[in-house]
Image (cartoon, rainbow, N blue to C red; front, top):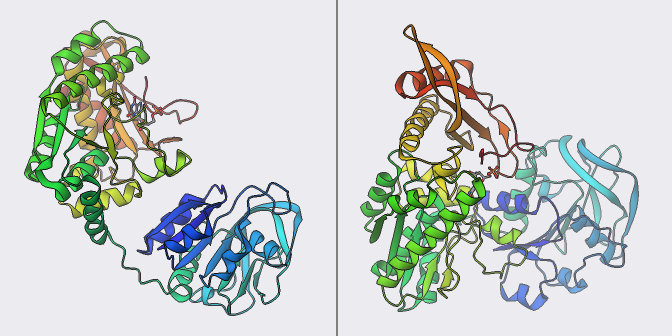
Length: 505
Ligand code: XMP
């Protein structure tokens, strides 16, 4: 275990990603976590993150000096290194100017951190302050043109600091440097894999649930499905999955999720509530109203099913680590209203079981593979809880739903054929409420316009429209017009987010 003390740096999550990529388990904890708590967890190493503060400000986040006297190796990054220098008797001052971006790092002394790293090597800097004098016992191990103390260490106490950011991709040798800290300094083993995770997660779920029962809402998304399958491994048939088909899923989706989950032997209550949802949506045009109605109806159906099951104590949620980190405290246990299934009933008083709360998305995909889930679920794109209701502009009707399903299936198929599905964050069709004039086989048509959306993104917060090859776009457009009656025009959305959003509603 490696603990990352967070000082509010914008790259803290990335540090965690890099450590986990080395198959070393790590967790991010607030910088003010007590020393007792840290000691109790017996970490093999500590990493102090970057942060926006200046160490000489009175309110600057700090740690007790004893942190450096516990005999646990410490790597301070940016603010973390400045804090180390400041607390141990060195000197930190504002730089002449703030420095951002790429620069060359010259390795000036040998260090375990530099094993396998060339000099000079490009690194990423982002800071205002600088260490101007290292504390007693430390030596400078690297410099750049403008920064004389770009790295420092006290090998005897195993304290290391780097002014640059090894966790970002722009630092070419960053991964190697982190790897060196973990393996050469902390003596980590690098044995943390998804299969070892499964074993410990199962133990944990068993001890939390005891002899009680649990309920999972399956949306077909990778997170909820993986969470459910994992819990099933732990407590078997004391878990019941409820899959509410709201009739707003994509072509073949309900069937494939059902089949995959059943193939793994997970008991599944499948509820086809399409008619109820369609009735709720009749004539509704406003996007927020659509969302609200789908969300409410979902809760009603889910509660009805849950009641039939008798006494259940736990509710399984596919919450991921980024949500846990973003919610500020790792202890927060509230159900997010934007949860993929549209918000779950709070008054049911179920305790949450969140077996994925320390995992990142790519780890969940790996876990899914390890648990035997098929590719199509493991690589499923994010899909909004209200489903196709927010991809049909204007009122939702069964005809429009089937039209959109066909068009969307063509987009999916062609993107997959082109081998682009893992590069794109999302790719889908939208049925606009615009009809235009066309000509097909000498006859005038007056039919719907389908929009195609494909974006690249890391987290869905920002997104760039995908520069799909023209040939591919051509193929998609001609197939949709040829194969989907009622559509005579296809347009491609070339706006990024911001200013647009990924979905159209
Ligand atoms: P936008 O359209 O806001 O979408 O750029 C960002 C990401 O969130 C998904 N999305 C939703 N997910 N319920 C959800 O669970 C919703 O109501 C919802 N609306 C958008 C969207 O697909 C994209 O990945």
